[in-house]
Amino acid sequence: MRDQLQTSLKVRYPELFELQEETFPIKRWGIEVGDGWYLIIDAILSIAHWRVRQGEGPLTLSDCKEKCDTLRISFRGNVDDRLRGAADAALEISARTCERCGRLGERRKHRAVTLCNNCASDDECKHADRSSP
Ligand SMILES: [Zn+2]
Image (cartoon, rainbow, N blue to C red; front, side, top):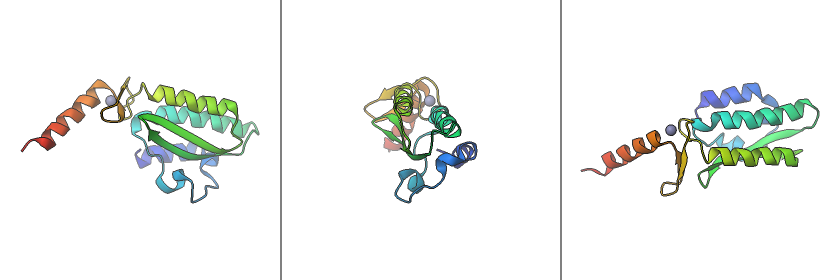
């Protein structure tokens, strides 16, 4: 994800990025997904932020990555079933959202990515350009 988008999340939900241990993947590699999933991540962080503000914390974002074509978000701290359910919902929504542009997408298992038709055809063109002599 572009630095500008990651920074906007850190500014809006600073407590979720505080006190991160060096071993947390989010500390080492940042948010490791495409910009198209920004709104999904924003929604989940908003839920976690609301819980912290209600005194249900502490919570820290520990990992945010793509795995098996879908978004995986994990937290450390007072993680309850509601937050786990929200992270599961994010996974399901990401399986239908283009990771690159955020439009309606589908999992492209042969390329291990979730893309809309436009981004998938762009990829096909780039791949064809690379393989041509
Ligand atoms: Zn797309």
